[in-house]
Image (cartoon, rainbow over all chains, first blue to last red; front, side, top):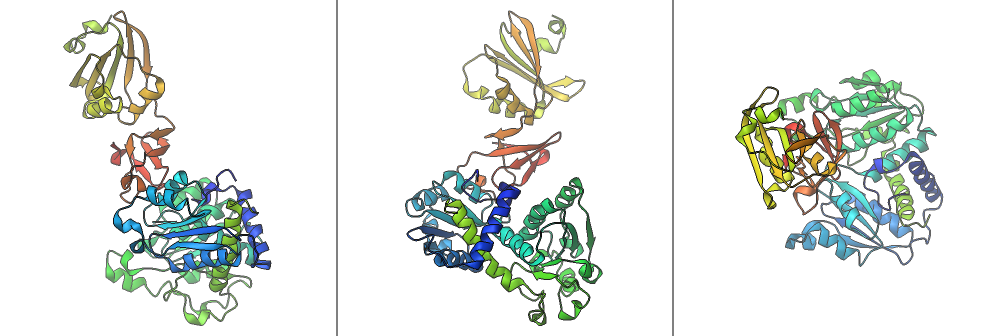
Length: 302
Length: 155
């Protein structure tokens, strides 16, 4: 890879993405190996993100590596006013790789430019979260057997959802057709629709999930958050329109899978969990294999 | 020289050799001065502003004695004075005319409009990719957000 850090999914060529996904499949077959023995990975979580951190730590531990770090900035020297620059330079002395979550946008790119060891962006504000995108791609590839020409139905908050934007950008490499299901206030921003149009890809927008659900190979659910609405009445009106129930799945494609970046609140009813089309917990497990692939690639061990 | 007879041009004295930058929008004159670092050099500089222009509304003009700019340096002002025209003067004669063009990348001039961008929190040199030249739109190298012409601020 031309860069030793992973900041944004766009930094990776399609070939590099496929190599990471292949490697993730290898780790899925053999998740416990001794590749990282003696290596130290620092998880610097300037804001809490329990799932992402546990997934990274699990990935490192299963490969025999060690983890140091902090889980939110109140327990680090940031509260004493230390700059990110100083934190990164200091941690460089202790770790072979840095996994960083930070509320400020662009912080990961900046850290990667200062750092002498690889930096993995585990989310920089509303900007990028490339390991989530890679694990989504891995989940899609694994369940569909291909990434080519799939129909992806994105549901919920498509305006602010970082995850759906990155996934859209990534999947656009494989002639995907998209259905966007969102309330008026949370529709996919124009810049992403323009991006798809420029690539000659098709998309369809609707506020009615049942209209498009049967066409989907993948349903990607996201949470509609109350705080996103300027008018609380609007939220009350739409909050139940974007909830998936088991009885909606009857006519859906045989191999369709439901993904969700988690945490879920109520947008997927728990009666869906037992359906074979529910895939969100396996998706979280795939995150461990994908992160094993990313870490070992960046360290040049694979 | 035809220009020498133009009464608007006579408001500031002619220079023997150096650079005349014309067609600067009057409201961005001081940004141009700052970007070129003219406030920090000892050369003789005269400028006029709020001059009437047929094409630009109110314009400004700067005459800098003994200074000749490289393209890369002068193109930095394209962000705030996209229609600026340069006259290179030697022996009181215009020996060359140049226009400015917006470069493909912008370093250390513009401020990212995203209040949550790292460049607005730490001492980071701003860097942008120019994604549109007219109107100007800059994509931040760090937060990847777009700063457009309207929200463009010079550091």
